[in-house]
Image (cartoon, rainbow, N blue to C red; front, side):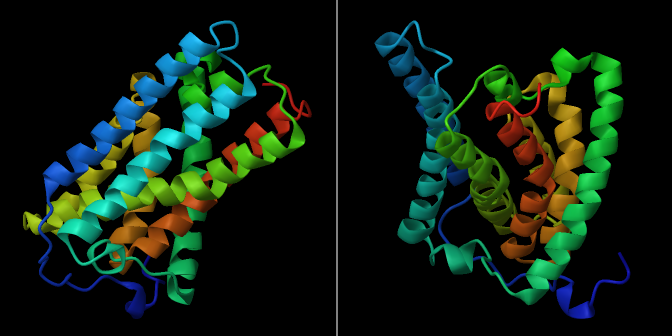
Length: 247
């Protein structure tokens, strides 16, 4: 990665002066888990014979992450300087260039790692939780496109705000070194997906994304890297839900 422009490399981040820390991340993660449990229970009680319905997939996939992201942004507003300052939010040409580079690197690494992992654990065990949900689940075109855009663009944005934004800032506030912050956020990102069999694969996915954040010191680059990395999985979900491709 020596070809990256000097301007893209992270400088020492300014001292954190916000009033939130690691407890804020635990709160946001609790919002995610509890909302997922409540939504699952409500849908199951209301429609016990339709747990694999299109509405269940869309609501169960998108709403918990959206609520957790909203909680994250609220924390920065109430106990900090807002998301732009506290989360190092940016989206400029340099972020785009660096994000695409790391995203393409991640796409190659993820494709290779997924192929190896599938041979080790078997195709059924290597499938993500979302992949299992959409198996043999036909969707209307509008719903399929909505899920595609979520997996490709919106989900990565939300996850980066939570992990490489809020969590990263909380660890920097504790005065952890940059590489230690990168390592721990990558591990927590992988473990927090609550898919034990896929944790090692998620670690591979998280490394290039975290490096984009590390090298620039800004959130925009890691968002782009994550979105690039998610394009092929999102496309596969779209083709499966439209019945064009078999799972």
